Length: 170
Image (cartoon, rainbow, N blue to C red; front, side, top):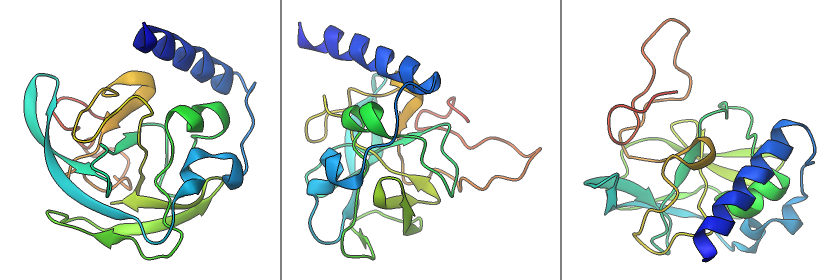
């Protein structure tokens, strides 16, 4: 069974990353580096946790995710973790806002290269996903990105931004 092994391998990679056993990969070694031109972000309907949600997807319809530990200025996804959760890269900035995009798209230049952000959140895909099919929700601190996700720059002491199902926060 491919999926359980992938999840177990993912947990092992996450544990190694947390322990400092994985170092950052160069942008050329990441699956995201295969991108060409500007990234396109649009919305689509998908089933998330048993409910139909409007989510962010890339130009191929792959669901986009945010990683809870990231900040507006730093992606903490690199090395082996980035091979499971490839960053959305835009080689020709700026990224293109497709149908349904109401938030701010930008590019963060970090360890992953020119990574696309939405309302300050660096965006990722998941290697086990298919177009408009969410399989990575809640795995390894990743949650599916929605058009209504609030800015990552939430001031200290204010309410945490809600996730795609309303109950998931940071």
